Image 1 (cartoon, one colour):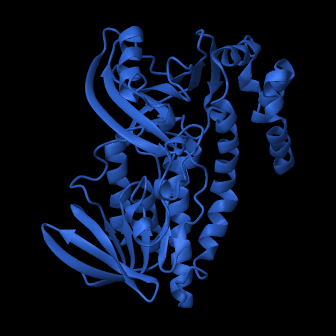
Image 2 (cartoon, rainbow, N blue to C red; image 1 turned 120 degrees about the horizontal axis):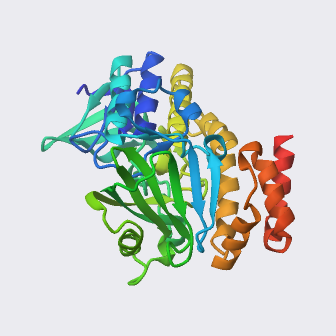
Length: 401
């Protein structure tokens, strides 16, 4: 490593690698560091992404695509199934990735663009001078280095240390984080065409269980529940084991991961003097689904563009980076805010409520609807139940017009 760069990116997940790539493509001198010795390992997500939104950042490559699904199937507590096509299913359904290879491909793209990539390289603190972030204290192979930069981009995940070192509150309350567990399983009965979601207070309180096919009779089977719902009898991994024992009794578990996802809505502050946060570090995952790959990549690209503008103008202060806050909140943040409103109402629905919503769509061809027609159908058939959603529905119609 050199002792100075234009931009240091901490964390080589999708958001960090996209930020590094786009900054390097603009001619900036970029260092991308990752604390683990292998980028993309361990995998801490269901690995689902939408096709069109992914293609905006990288050309799809069959080497890191495990499955190409048709859509999703959602199961209410009584087993009623609602089927949605790929477009209606959102940004988490389309391709199921081989995330280890995908993350490495993104880091390789960053390196090809000119960024320097260093693995097994840990940020241990920030260089702070006169209220500005001026670089990163780094540990690599047991040695300590001070590496300076004009801007640091923190892409270091949930409850970001980089943000906290800079004075940004990245702490999440139990009600603002999904506690997650996921198994990679082998089972002959896995449906390779659909991503599946299972709802219900006994199945996954204030959350859901997912089954994302990965080909060759394999699937990611995982669960996310609100941290506030976790207890001795409702631990995420315990509920997941019970689901698999009941629904996939002959499956074999070959990998396991656990982790957390922020579902708090937009963070109050994602920039300060000399620093920007992207991805889970900035709470940019969807509060309803927990998905965050595309949001992180979108934010990484915005952060790179703003970094270039700020460095060209010679103003990397919080004011000079304000365009990052403005741009991501107007796009990603707007969608996150809407999802948060839905999540906060969704977690209050009883099993009977969920069953009623599913029953109202029985026999309806959802493929011929857009999201507004779908909401109208749900509201029409469940007026009492959906009354709390009326203001949100009105906002969606207004903002789309």
